[in-house]
Length: 177
Figure: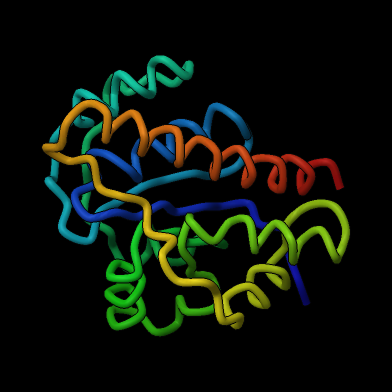
């Protein structure tokens, strides 16, 4: 039995750049779903990195009050868990093998959108499960802008924004079912 995707967890390494940026954008674009972020090696309690925080503000998302946190076992119960790199995906699979059919790369969202489009509007657990079983193209990691020049943060922000916008379309259609 499939069920609509109503919760998303975004994961990166330190939880100060990529995953909080994606979390804030997705929350802004799709109110009403549960969105969280965490890190596999989080800089616990740290605010969002200043360059990515500025990129978030430019897009209408407010990073005030954000604090990095370590991913916990209960976080992995989300309907969809998206990581920024293959290394993070491998880490989470090793930590909790039960997440494997809900776990994928943010960089592979276009393939998820294609699968969801074939079954109708919205995103459900069946589409996510089919997506995680596919062999997907390599080279879709989202680059880490931490302690890199401002142009890297800007490029990473544009990439994440494009992927989050595609995901938001799917999740908005899910809510309209």
